[in-house]
Every structure is written in C-alpha cells, then in structure tokens.
Amino acid sequence: MFSIDVALKSLPLLLGASVWTIVYSLSSVAIGFCIGTLMCAAGLSQSPVLRGIAAFYVSFFRGVPLLVQLLLSYYCLPLIGINVPSSVAAVGTLALCTGAYIAEILRGGFLGIPAGLIEAARMVGLSRAQILTRIEVPMAVRFTLPSLVNETTMMVKASSLISVVGVLELTRLAQNIATSTFQPLEIYLTAGVIYFVINAAITFVGSLVERGFRAEKAA
Amino acid sequence: MTFNLAILTDNWPLLLDGMLLTIFIWVVGTAIGLAIGLAVAVLQLFTNRWLAAPLTFYVAVMRGTPFLIQLFVIYYGGPFFGLDLTPLVAGVGGLALYGGAYFSEIFRAGFLSVPPGQIEAARMMGISRLAIIRHVQLPQMLVIILPALANMTVLLSKETAVLSVITVNEMTSVVQSIGSTTFAFAETLLFLAVVYWAFLEIVTALARRLEKRVGRFTLRNQH
Image (cartoon, one colour):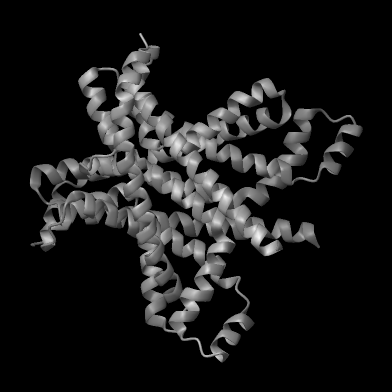
C-alpha cells in the first residue's frame, strides 16, 4: 500500500538533507561561474596557448559523463596525493563540469558586447581586468541570464549524482531511508517533489531578476 | 602511482560487452524517446486540453527532477505498481521517458515554427490533419530542429552512465567492478573517460556534418 504516513514522517529529514543539495549545487555554480568566466576569456583571447587550454577544458568536461568525472576525482585524487573530504572533491568536480557549460553560455554573451564599448573603456584608461569584471561580465550575464538560470537548475539535478561517491545530500539520504523503511516509492517520490520545488523556486527567482533587468533597461 | 595497462587488455572482453551494452541502451533509449517526444508534442498541440494538461505535467516533472531519482522511482518503485522490471528494462525505459520529455519540447517548437498560413491553406484544400502533420509540417520542421535533436541525442549518451547506479552492466558499471577487484581505478576510469570523450566527439562531428547537409534545404527555402 502507498503510505502517505511514511512520506510525511521522512519529510523533515529529507528537507534537512535538501539544504545540503542546495549548498552543494549553488556553491558549485558560483565556483563554476568564476572558472567559466576565465575559460571563456581564455577562449576568446589572442593567445593560441590559452585558446587551446580553454578548448581542451570545455571539450573534456562536456564530453565525459559527470558520473565518470565524479568517480575519477573520488578514486584518483588520493592516488596523486590529494586527500580532501569527498564532499570537497565532489563540489570541485561539479564546479569544473558546470564551468565548461557556463563558459560556452557566456561566449555568446561576450560576443554580443559591442566592440566600440570595449574600445571606449580602454580609452578612458580602464585596465583589462577592470573591463572584464566591470563591463564584460555584467553585460554577458544580462544577455545570457535565462541560460545561466537553466544551467543552475541542471546543476541542482546533477548534484544528485554525488550521492554515488558517498556524499550525504538529498538523494543519498533518500536512499538510506528507502532501504531502512522498505518504502522506496514514497521516499523517492517525496525526494523528487523536493527537487522539483527547488528548481521551480530557482526559475521563479531567475524570472524576477530578468524582469528587474528589463525594467532597469526601460527606465 | 604505477600505470598498468595490462588490466585493460586482460579484461578486454568484459569492457567490450559493457561498451556494446552502453551503445545499445543509448540507441534504443533515444529511438523510443524520439517516438515519445513526437507523440507528446502532437497530442499537446492538436488535441483538447484535457489530454494536453497531464502531458504538460509529465514534461515538467521529467525536466524538473534528477534522472537518478526517476530511475530509482521506476526501478525500486515499479514493483508497487506490479512492474517488476529488470535493471536494463527500467534503465532503457527511464532514459526514453527522460529523453522524451526534452524531445517533446523540441518537436513542439518545431511545429510552431511552421507558418500557420500554410496549415490553413492545406486545410482549405481538404487535406486531413494527420496528412498535414506528415507532409507539410514534419518535413519543414525537421530541418529546423535537427541541431537541437542532435544535441539532445548526444546529451543522452552521457546519461547512460547513470544506469550503472541501478546495476545495469554497462560500461561504467563494468569499469567500476574491474576497478574494485584489481584496485586499478586510475587506469580503468581514465580509459572510461577517454572512451566516452572520443565517442562524444565523433557523434558530435557526425551531427555537425548531418546539419550541414540538411542546412542547404533551409538556405534554399529562404532565398
């Protein structure tokens, strides 16, 4: 029998674990955004070496399944002498993975910035780094906001995979409860609903910010 | 860290089996997913809203929740509905349902991209609804949505790795079991990464070529 009772009883525990899901996925998006910005800038630079590094990075992290990346970092980092907690390794891997996607998203945004604007900024004496952080990144983010919000929701979903390398978050806890209560359907459906609500909230906030940008532009 | 490539040659038959199963899962899952996606898009756009509403819900749920959770619900929750599925069937079915939701959005956008005037004209000439879909809308929209379809197909090939979690014996699962018996994680996992990477690069390149070939139809139409 489908037991609402089991679902309700496990809800507080699952909600508690979903905080970790949010923390892991949002922090990996934040770190991934920095990596993605740098890699995007490298990809658009004059230097063939930097362009090569960026192309290799984007191709590898988009070409290998995230699960395989997670397994690689989980099993192989200790082999090369890097001993970090599995949660740190997992967030690092998520960040590297999403960074590759964000670099591709931002590329479109960077290319949409009028060249005259950059020239003007250089004329008034802004440094290369200032132009990047004060002009290019804010504009690229505005141009590509819907894609960036979408990538964030993808990362919330992708963070479920870090349960496989033993990091406690929503999916991992759901697995633990499901095996101890023998009610997998109720537990996994509840977990699914929580993921759905988190993503709906992120999409909602994203649309609010987008509306704010548009209002600002109109004013 | 020593690198022992003999692990790979020793276990070659196992690895090959895993690779073939991964490709099988990908091809079958994508094919069923495309069929689901097309059916959902057609039903959403051309029938009444009582049929469309549950389908919209299906698409939202599949796109809003992790693929891993969907697999768990189907595989571990299936017996509750009397569906005692083997891991492989649950996995391929899950992949098809997951991909189908994304494909349906692509097909929907494709149907909407065909100018409504053409459909009105076709209807005026007494062509049936299904014939309009088949002969007017599909040929034109397929050219437009091909890049998106190809992109999603490539993405699905990466999702096949997740099936290892519900004990499907595909490539990732084979590599993990070899790794845990020989402790040669670095060799096996790097091999796995390189195989996926090469596979994705090849499939992406093939998709680009197909897009280019089909692209001339759009050019001809525009001029």
